[in-house]
View 1 (cartoon, helix red, strand yellow):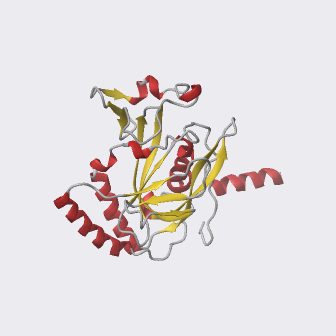
View 2: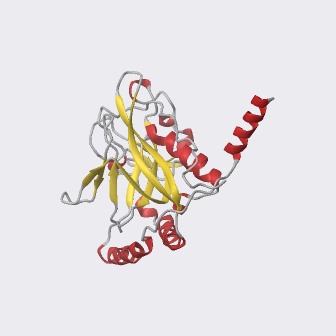
View 3: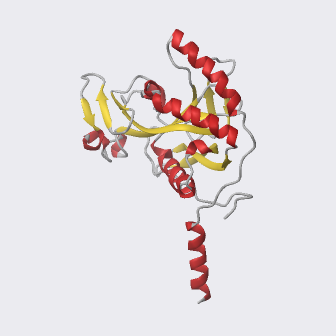
Length: 272
C-alpha cells in the first residue's frame, strides 16, 4: 500500500504545472531600441544581420559564435538567451563537404523546393525523407533540423542556432515537456544552451545541444521579448535554409540516435 501511495504521489508531481522563478532583469528593452535602429538601417542597405551559433564537430564541447568579424568571433561552452522564434526546416545537401547551398530545401519542414527545377515537393511524401536513405544506409538523406532565433543579454543582434538531427529529440522534449507542460512559451523564459559529447555505434563522436530552463522573464523583459517574437514571426526572409545550417564534415555527417532528452527537474525556488 505504501509503495502504491508513493507511486501515486510521484505521478502527481510529474503532472503538476510548476511555475519557475523569475530571472534577474536582462535589459531586453534597451536591446529593443538598438535593434530597431539596426532594422531601420537594413531597410536602406538591404540584407539581414544575424550572428550564427555553430555547433562543434567531432564531439567538441564549445559553441562558435560567428559575427562576421574575426575580431569579435568567439567560442563559449555555454550561453543563455531568450528563444524569440523557432521553426522546423529541412534540407537535402550534396555529399561533398563545404557549405554549398542545399539541392532542395524547406523553411517549414512541410514543403520543399528543388533548387534546380523549382519543383515544390511535399516533404512527408519525399523518398529522401525516409529513414535508411542517408549515408551508409543510416538516417535520412534529407536532414530534418530545427532553427532557433535567440536574443542574448547585452547583444542587440539575434543569434541563429540551427539544430541538426542529433539534437532534435532534446529540443522537442524541452519545448514540450519542460515549457508547454508549464504553459510557457519559449519567448517567456530564459534558456541556457550547452553542448555535450555523444558517440554512435561505430564509435564516432558527435556533439549534442542541451537546453535548460533558467526562469521566467520580468515584466519589462517580457514586453521586449514579445516585440522580438512578433517581428521574427513576420520576417519570412530570414527563414531561408542555406549551406551554413548543417555541418557536413565527415565526423558529424551521421544521424545517430539522439541522447536522452532534457528531463523535467524542479528549479531552485520553483513553486508547486
